[in-house]
Length: 174
Image 1 (tube, one colour):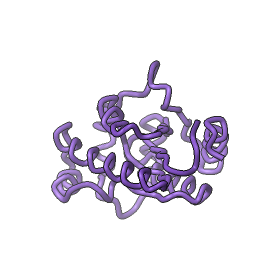
Image 2 (cartoon, one colour; image 1 turned 30 degrees about the vertical axis):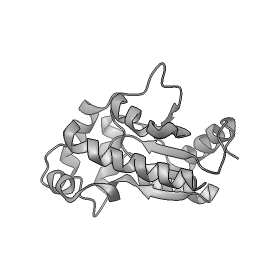
Image 3 (cartoon, helix red, strand yellow; image 1 turned 135 degrees about the vertical axis):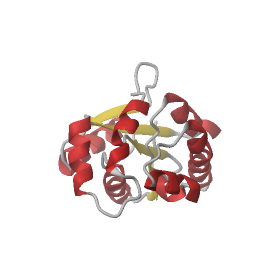
């Protein structure tokens, strides 16, 4: 069962899929802490992305460990958290599951054209739209035994939130 105190929800997907917007809305709905994974990137990662250079697994590893530690610290204190994090590969999601976290991934699923249209509207982010294709190339969609990952089709914020709130109710997060 998933309860409001001491749990983590990761809103995952490619850059520009709406993770931060959706994550903030879910956190507000449930009175949880919100953490934007982008805020936890080291300066070197931000510089690479800003320059249009895709991150490697090695670049992401320390960042993902930092996110996991942040979730663990908050959950141990009885604080639930909603985190916006791409979590593109299965091994990244495995790392995020460390420390026995009570964790649920909500995957904002869309295609290249949908997300590209969303990126055209985004302003002031260090991740250039030119890296979107590399995000889709890196993405390993959750499947099969990753039962803690639920796909939410990208539509509009209202519909996405309705679907997410229904999923959370099904998982005992009320």
